[in-house]
Every structure is written in C-alpha cells, then in structure tokens.
Amino acid sequence: MIAFAFKRIMKASHGIFRDKAVDRTICNARLTTTLREWFGWLDREDLGVLVRDTLRAKDASDNPIPKSIETEIWHKRRIHKCCFCGTTLTADSDSIVRDVQGNRATLEHVWPSSLGGDSVSDNLVPACARCNQVKSDLVTWEQGSVHEFIYPIDFHLSDYLPRLPLAQKILLQRRAVVMLAQREKISLKHALLAVGPFGDLKPLDADDTWDIFNTQNHLDSLGEVLW
Ligand SMILES: [Zn+2]
Image (cartoon, protein in one colour):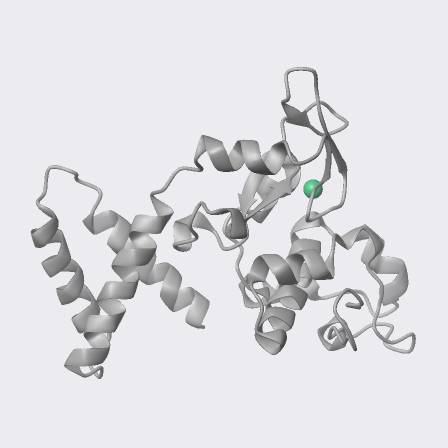
C-alpha cells in the first residue's frame, strides 16, 4: 500500500511542477496544499518532512543518467549480464552494449526514476531492452495482479516457474530483493546483485507444488537466495 501511496504522491508532484513557467515557490505551495489535503492527520512537522522528501524525490527523478556514470558502468567490463534475466550483454566495436538479438542494452534504475530513483551508480544496473520495458515502474510484489498468479489445480510450481511470464518473474525477483534489502539493511542494488538473475528460479520447498505465495526466499548467507 505504501508503494501505491508513494506513486500517487509522485504523480501529483510531477503534475504540479510540469509547467516550468510557474514559479517554484508557487509549485511548492501547491504541493504542500495537496499533501495536507491527503494527509490531514499529519502534524506540521511530519507534513514538512513529507513535502521535503517528495521534492527531493521529484528532483532526483528528473536527473538524466550522466554520461560519466554510463561510461563508468559500461566500460568496467566488455561483457555484462542483464541483472533481471541474466542474458549476456556484449559491447560491440563502437562500445555500444547489446544483447544477443542486437538490441541495445540500457542502464535500469533499481528504484524507478519515476518514483524518485536517482541516476547514481548505486541505483543503476545493466538490463536488456526486454526486461527494461517489462519492468517499467514495477516496485513491489503487491503491484502484480492477483489474477496473474492463479494457476490450474494440477499446477506444479517446479514445472511452471521456468515458463512464468517475464513480468511475474520480475515481481518474484523484486519481492526477494526487497525482503533481502530490508532484512540485511543493504541497498536495493546490493540486494539485487545478491539475489541474482532469475534464470534458474526454483521453488523453496519441493513439496510446495502449487501455492506460489509461500515461495518465500530464505537464505543463511548472502548470495544463496532461493525463491
Ligand atoms: Zn533481461
């Protein structure tokens, strides 16, 4: 629910600040009024924090990826992996990184830029064009439609996982990443790298053959996240 509320706040703030001709002080006042209407129970101090954090997130999401960061990440090595699906990404002779189909790879914001994710190295990971498009601004497991996760009665998780649609795999991976980041108090990027791509999804429990909601990730150490 927090993700939905945050999405709504960010959408409103982008709308308020869209017209660059309007003075920023006026926009700030409009944002404060909107947030006060929505969150009337907050005291003055908490509302101030909310306004300030929203402004910071809005400004961060307007930041394009600096060329220096692109260069730093892409040129660290010639071969990369898409952090979501694990497909190999290779730099061509012009140093443009592409997947095996020749589509240009991108740097993906781990926390979506539309929700205030800044274009800094700690929030950017290599992604193939397909995953980047599907991921869009999916943030949490809860954003997936429940209906997408209703399976036939004879459904066997271990058979089914490899055939899950890409968006569902990304949501499953997303859930593991958020849980790991919260538990270990590490950044989302660090957690994503520890969880790894979802190329070899496996059920947590061999007996857990149909209830996908029970596929919690457990791990004793970083890098051993199961699904
Ligand atoms: Zn991918």
